Image 1 (cartoon, rainbow, N blue to C red):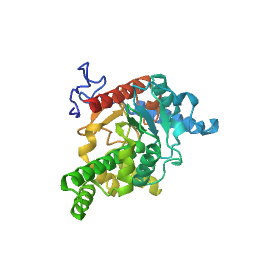
Image 2: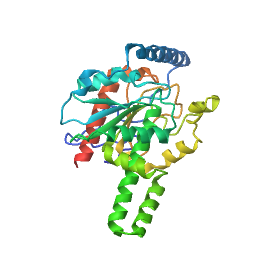
Image 3: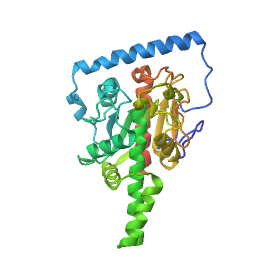
Image 4: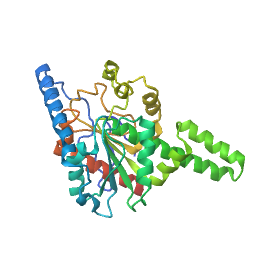
Length: 301
């Protein structure tokens, strides 16, 4: 599948474009509406942060699901605990998916590359289900998910080079060179990512090109999302994994003025506004489910 901005994508057996796929830009709302959307978005984010008070144990129902459907791994955004995504996780579980979370990430303040390694190692610790796994992530979590795909590609390229070159030091050197070409994935990170068997990523409101607003912050956790940050630049350059990404976003995102469209990916705009409130929209859950199905169909072919 070749996915791109404004393109009609083949999503498998029904040969139809994904509902909401980007076809031009919507008319920009007035200033007062944008202000209202922003205020409502921040109020929703504050309310969802209180979800931590309800406990951090994964719902028992999330352990059950249809074996024919990929397992979902939830990744929150920066300063978000996984409980922030509980409503979305419930919707995906109701659609038949088993849902997993990654322990030990806290509120996702760890650097992207290290978080990607921890994520891959955590999900690789359990055998991959027959239907595979899909990462569903919000905001910075999508950057972490893309890094996992980069590491996975590095492992595949290293394995391919090793098989082609045969045993010996030259084969090891070729494998190392291939891994370096994709990114600075360590051997352990690449191995964990490969074992995780991630089919792809559904990212919601992810700043794939960074956010210029990050320059306004002193906090290094937020400043790491600047468009000029080394990791952001490296992730943007790794276009070879974009076909395995479905990017979901709304009509207005007050935190990512650059937008979340990603060249080479499947881009889906849903009729919802906000960086956080979009997570509660039924249209978002529907788009995520269809994105997961699309990634699974790519793997099947």
